Image (cartoon, rainbow, N blue to C red; front, side, top):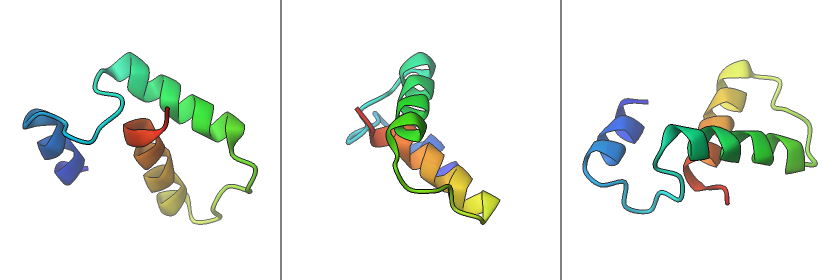
Length: 57
């Protein structure tokens, strides 16, 4: 989380979704479009959702 926050603060280079609305929309879209089951480890699943919020289009 701290690394993602720092990336965002210094310009979000490489981020597709730099505002909260787009970030949350990307998380939702990824969860909807993903055809694999959720990771049984809730922390890994949360990490995947955050990655999707950052990069998923």
